[in-house]
Image (cartoon, rainbow, N blue to C red; front, side, top):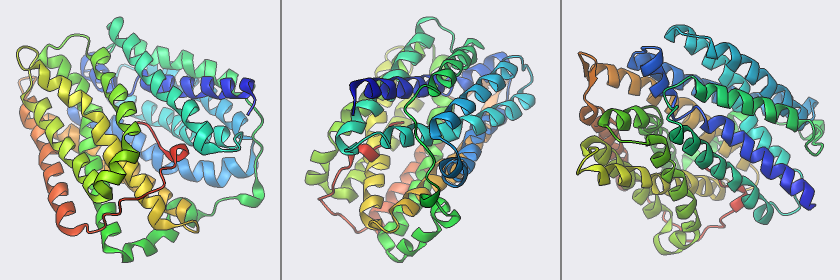
Length: 405
């Protein structure tokens, strides 16, 4: 790959996650503070992203990849997203905000797959060329959350303005990316995108248990994305966004440990370690405080790397190995739809309902709120330990396929 192309792709990936990181983790605090939203309204706003993630694979796989050059689609979607954000910024009603964020997410969600597709099609060896490009997304997330934290704008409309201007830049920049033409002859079918071909994997009990566990653990995951920021802010913790960026740094570090962990632990115990980390982090969130117990908050944040990498990234690799070449795409499509669509959709709704249930006189009982996802994670852990039997210790870690949250 030419150096100039590599730089273009790295800039593309940086801007992609800069756009996302500017608002995603802070949206709940903005809605509670500026829109006077209820927990239910916040949960619905995050569920909008899950709804968009269900639609996105069909748009990319069955329309964009077949009929249009990917870089042009990326450009149009980002420009459309910037336009939607312009109107979202003017919105002051929480119910109207839901429809605006849903519309925006429908423009944004497909870009996650498009940027990876554009990058991959320029490579000869994705296993060695993709990681340095993809890691710029993690760098961008760290940079933008630290900007938000430094200027203390996490509860301000400025987070969406920052995203809007970034989307506008990426939209224009996309038209200058390397040409990635459509491939009609390699179009993806409905069954492949929906993962219907992968249903045969459910004959394997361990895979069925893994699949169910993946969906269920995405419910607590949604609590983290939607409620961690306002929870830490209410505790009195300063510079919340800056400190939460430690989660992405942790994620990068633990991803490097995956090959070694596979050899030492095997897939089952890696997944178990990931589930235990989920339980611990919610307990730390629930019982920490901004005084003598602030160390609990730091541990809860840093555990993000273990939680995400040891369960979701390991799960991607496990699914890849189980499926084989013929239904690999279908299997990953099924997991994506079930986790980011169904699991996180349910979790976003439940996090909002839970926040409202444990709110009295405008004050949230964060300890009680965090015990709900902790309890769900305990149930998933017990289910997994009892019924999951597969513990392969060797797996070809395909770095080009690893995702970073």
